[in-house]
Every structure is written in C-alpha cells, then in structure tokens.
Image 1 (cartoon, rainbow, N blue to C red):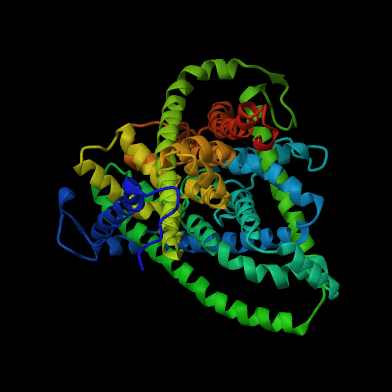
Image 2: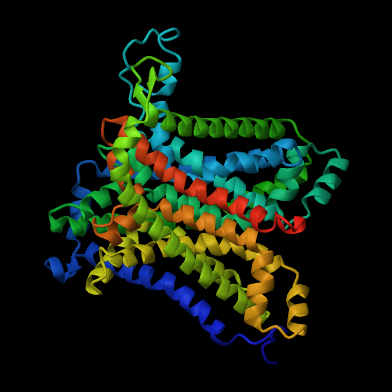
Length: 570
C-alpha cells in the first residue's frame, strides 16, 4: 500500500525537512567525534601528529591529579543524577493532586529560564564563606566577625558542584515528569488505587511511575550526561586543583601549547566512554529495578515509609527552590550594592553606579548574545515546524529512533565533539564567526524547541485544517492563518525555551567562536573567578534577564494579540 497523504495537501519540499534537521545534528557531531577521536590516538597532522599512538593516553594517565579528577567526575555525575531523579519522583508523588502541583509550574519557571552559569554564580554568592548564609548567622549565632576558613565553593569533593546541578536538574526532571503525565490517565488510576487502601504517594509510585518512567528515560540520560561532563558550572563552583575531567580537557584544549591538544582529546574521549558506560549501566539497573519493583508491588504495602520518603523529597525540593530564589536575589543585590561589608546581612549602601559603569562593556556581549539566540531560535523553529508539518501531511509520526537522534546532542558530552567540530570550522574558514556560533548553538537549541512544540502541534484538532482546506485554502495558507495563530502560545513558549538554551551556551561559544565571539555567558564565566562581586553580579543578572524577558514575552504576547478572543489567550 502507498503512503497515506494528509487531506490538506501534499508535502513537496517538506520531505527534505527531516533530512536537513538530521544533518544539522549529525554533521557537527559526527565530524566532531572524528576530530576528537583521532587526536586522542595521536593523529592530527596540522600540529605534528602524523601517526596513531597511545602517547596522549599515557600523558593523561601521568597527570598528577588524574585519579582524583576522574573520581570526582564520576561521583558528582552519578550522585547528582540519582538524587535528582529521586527528589523529582518524590516531589511528584507527594504534590500531584495538591495545590502545590499547580504552584510548582509558576515557581519553577524562573529557575528553568535562568542559565546554569548565572544560577551557579548566584549560588556561589550564597554559600561562599563570606556569602549570604554566613552573613545571616553571623556574628550573633556563630561569633564570626571574619569569613570562616571553610572550603564551600570549589570544595575538592565537588559538593558545591553537586548542589548547583541539583538546583537546575531537579526542576527540569519535574517538568519532564509533568509532561509525561499528560499521556497517562493519572487521576483514574490513582482513584482506583486509593479505593483499594493505598496512600496517595504509594499509589503514585506503584501505579503511575511504571507508566511514566519510559517517557522520562531520555531526559534522565541527558541529566546524567550533563552532570558527568558539565564545564561552566564546574568552573564556577567545582573543584579546581585538580578540576573535573571536563574542565581539565577544556584547559588543555585552550592551552597556548598545542601539544596539549592530544591529552585533551584523550580526556574528552574518556568522558564519552564514561557517559556511554553510565547509560549502559542504567539499562541494566532498569531490569533490576523492574524485578524489585514487581516484588514490592506484589507485597501490597499501602504506605508508611514510602509516604514519609516522598514527603522528605518534597521538602528537599522546596529547599532547593528557595535556595535558587535566594541565589537570584543575592545576585541582584550585589549588582546594586555600593557597600556590603562582612558580616552585614544586607548592603549598607545601594547605588546604580556599578550598572552605569558596566553598560558600555555589557552592550557588546548582550548584542551578540541576542543576535545568536534569535538566529538559532528562528532556524530551529523553521526546521521544527517543517518536520511537524511533513509528519502530519504524511500521516506518519516520528518513532523512537528519531527521538534518540533529537536527544543525541544532549547525550554526547559537549567537550567530546566540539573540539573536532572546531577543526571542521577551521577547515571551512568559518571559525570565529557569528554564523559558526549560531550553528553550534542550533545543535542544542533545536532538540529543546522541537520537544517543546511537538506535543501541542500533534494535539491540535485536525478538523480546523480540514475545514480550511475544504474552503479552498492552500496548505501554506492553512499553516499561516489557522495552525500558527491557534498554536501561537505554544510556539512562543517553545521559542522562549530555545532562546534560553542559546543564551546559556558556554562551551559551543568558546569553541565555535575561537575566543573571538564574546557573549554574556562567556564573559560571566570568565569573570566568575575574579574578586569584584559587583562586576560578576552585573554580568550574571544581565545573562539571566534575557531568558526571563523572553519567557515574559511568550506569556504576555498571546494575551495582547488575542485580547478580543478570550478562548485563544492561553
């Protein structure tokens, strides 16, 4: 039988959209991995590597802090992923069906919009020895009149790094679980389980979780890969001597001595192997968890410890949310503080002088950040809409393989392919250009935009399109005058998500820009190691303000455009 065709018309050039979208992913990732794997084994003729060898690995293993760097990387990555999953599941089990579930979306939105590095800078202001927590309890409780000699930010065990990652990754997983719940008849199943005597939290974990987990598997893998290979957050609050493996690789990649490229490529390749091994281990653990969970469900326990654990997880999530908002507030206060001596809990003098002095310096990076984010978001939107239209007109929804392709940039460590992609850009004479940076951002922007837009697009009642087509409208006109206006709120939210992802990109900007393209994120991360908190705070606040403004516009514009059409405002 031939392929079914959607009644609103043929696909034409839309058939090329999936291939173009896959090429946007696979070309930089494939070329990047090849450009990293070959130097990892000594082959890069441009800098003198003419033969395959194990010398890069020998240099990596001979590094004095290698064992500690590897141990911290693995510990932080695995512990963060496990804790993030447990806390998110516990919160959802406790909050679903309560008023807190509705409030959670509004509370998590600013945290999700804030780039990782900006939130890490704000968190550093809170937990540092001279930070807001120490100030709040000093000297009346601690007796400290000077900052204590305690390693919080940059502690060698990576605890601060783990905390900074949890503040971002727990809300992300909660959002992914909330989205997955729309595909499950949650209320009916919970009502049935509760009628059998199960407590709310126990019923959620025994009945809903087994149906939800397959849908959040890939987001969990993305959290795992990110936690193992994060660079910008690790540079701000992570250990420095030795650093995590990803930071070590970046240091060597950016070293003036090009011979360090070889051990850097070996470190990046090792990170790739670690992520692959961790994802493989997850599949094995899933089988163990399924068997253990089946036995637990069969025992028929109705509550008790499970409910208490869910409440504890919900409380911990609340602490993380409060900590995130305190970090954002502290960052804003430092940007306006003219005088804030330790151990005072609040600034003694406020002033706009710091902002007035920084405006000229902020203008250039802010303009570049805005241009790259808008360009990558618009290209991603065009590709996503084309793919979704092609899918609907061909009456064939993308399968699991396409979903894996979408998540590929989120599962492969950035440092494992961005150096190789930079080699490709150098050969094409595109490195250091705005277009190269936008392309590098597109690799990460497109998955988030597509995943944000796909469900609303597929859920749109096709009778609207059929009615318009029946009145003689062309497929393009149906798209422009029927689908896009109805889906405007979803499109704007997806664009805001993509915009925020672009603003937060550090490593793609460094490699594709070759150090010549400065954004608010690269400047903020660079300044984070400095001593002037006012300067750091100004850049971090500006970095966080752009995504927040995009989210605000995504919420307010539909209400403005459809102010005369109550049903289309939301």
